[in-house]
Image (cartoon, rainbow, N blue to C red; front, side):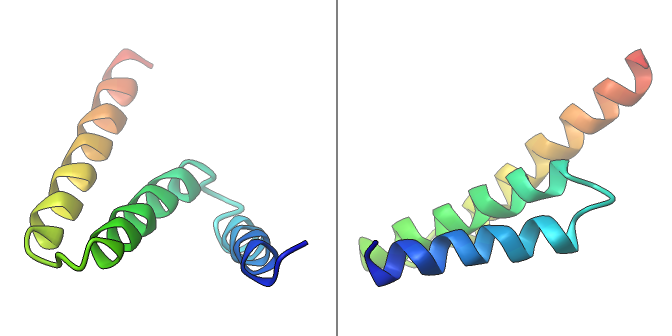
Amino acid sequence: MPRHIEKLYREEELLREVCIDQPEHVELIQEMLLLQRNKTFLRKKRGLQQDLEKRLDSFLVRRIKDTVRG
């Protein structure tokens, strides 16, 4: 297995350990890391802050809706 794939698996494993009490945070953090990696890959850091804020806002709105329904 390529080294970078092993690193990604290890990163996810550690993230799941840290977020054991709130597993929904794993998905949020992974999505935010993906946004950052994509911006870095494209060499466009412009807009990263806004993209991260939009993703966080949508996560919070979904959590609030789930709480109200529940």
